[in-house]
Image 1 (cartoon, helix red, strand yellow):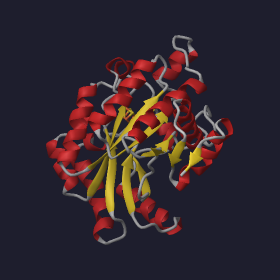
Image 2 (image 1 turned 90 degrees about the vertical axis):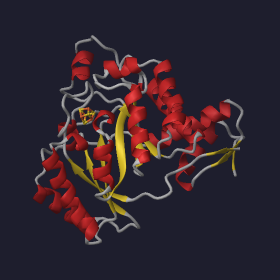
Image 3 (image 1 turned 180 degrees about the vertical axis):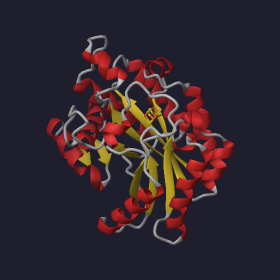
Image 4 (image 1 turned 30 degrees about the horizontal axis):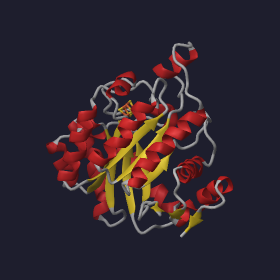
Length: 303
Ligand code: SF4
């Protein structure tokens, strides 16, 4: 029997986008300004965003403010501390439970880990993208796979949950590149991962190269298969996958089906059925995917 895992507790995450702030250079695929549609938020913007989110969202057991879309720990120190203090006000008055942020693996060290730990940050998401050195270079990431290992370990040692963000389907990616990311999970032991299948965002070097015919986009089917492989590698290690795909917006080209998460999970179940697995223990949230896979493999069972 194969047992799938889902995130045990999904906090309400209030996103505060800091598009590209702290990024010393831009990765080949990234255009946070178009994806998020915002520029640098002032402290007042942060306060208003949090209050407005809380006014319309359904209450959940846990609420966290997250600084996303840039390299939070590479912000100039005072700017980072100002955002931290603003977020901490909400934790200290009991409105939210914790803070979190995303950052680059080469922009976290013991000192910054300590600052986060001492200021209500319980989770840090590292933009990893791939554990293939070759692909990291093509993506113009500017850090190595080894650096990801160090950063994940550092967060664990600091007592901070580590989430890793991967990309699948970057032009030029090979099956071997994906396998390197899959096999790295047992070493990195993240608390959760997110997977972003590649989308060509306008005004990025990779999109320009695709338009000029210098690069070729992998087919959506191939990218979905690779995403399913990474998803499955996480499931085998009982690592929850908390999101697959970018939020939809008019600036994000539509490459994948709307029910991307369900499709990927269904592909993972089908892959296991092809390998001979017949019995599955699945979280309620994966039921639709199981029913999708059952159309191809009617003999599989949910226990
Ligand atoms: S992927 Fe991350 S590090 Fe790279 S440009 Fe985008 S926000 Fe900055």
